[in-house]
Image (cartoon, rainbow, N blue to C red):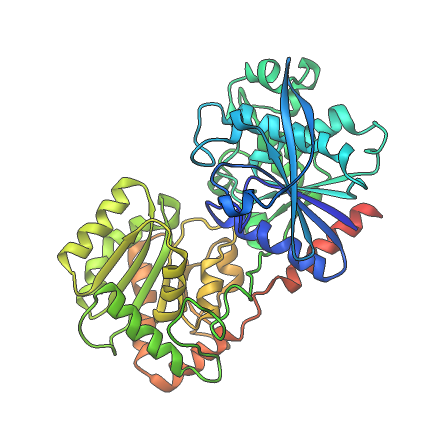
Length: 472
């Protein structure tokens, strides 16, 4: 099959979150199974100059954005067996940053129309267009309105993946004609609760809807998780499927990770102790190396469960636990972690921002990884942590429920709790701390976690099955 992935970001070109990791890894996994994969992205200014200068020019076309006609350059390169295409327009993408601009709606309307127009310039049209999140939600909408019956487009199927339902692309109804160029008789595809909702349009028109974990697929049918879209999703359950994300096991490999001071494996964990020692030195955390270290690598936003951490963090610190924290986000949470590091400089180290090399060292050097998300579509951090033998402490939601089994039962690989009550999370931390001091049992737990298969292999098979159902 020929699969074209449309996304707003992908590793190693431009990234702001887990979407980039998925789009950077899944096509590679599918290509290893014999399928032809391509990815199309905006040509952002943030893409490193070393990569931009190596792109090959394909052609330039004109793209309709409602009544406007806009220049679009198309560039390409290859990484392994995957072809990457880039949509160029300096007005829309020649900026510092990926999102958060006043005209994001128009920027991604342009991108979505450009993706469909680009297909005319490809040697062969794709069998599947796989779209991701609200930035590409109009591709199945435009395909159904304008392209479905054109020559060269008639046999294409569309798959749309919801990575985080909180971000929906909601705008006032005035954008329908002025920006999107969608006729009034098609307005019902996007109209929802008095707004234009781009995610709703994709749910209506895509041939299949997927989410990034089985648990999240049924959670978003509940109003508590759906951010208002449960009413439309309940009517589209027949085409909804949850497929668990994987991680790039070549990028995250404790035996061959150049970011680490020492290599280690499930059978030889001695290098992990060296990683912990160097992490404590790098972050300036003094005291006994025998005390447990909890790692946190996350965005500082409410749904990541930071409020639970705020309630009980001092109690955990005073019990003899150190924290290694990396992330950025809302100012109130950044200020909280910085304040904790000032109060307990020998027990709490905080680095604001995203430093990939340091994140690897925290995954490898910490003993436990705290991820108490209120909602988590899939989560990659807990899988990466297990890959490095760092035991996750998570709330049972979304992909966290699907990947972490509590150590209180057989074959546990972490510690879980159910509610959004801080004391419930604290109990999970106490259980982890208790088991940590049983060194033989802890080494077995670390080994079980490291041997978990969270690669893309099984997930890629599930996507192939979904594509083949559509093709047949």
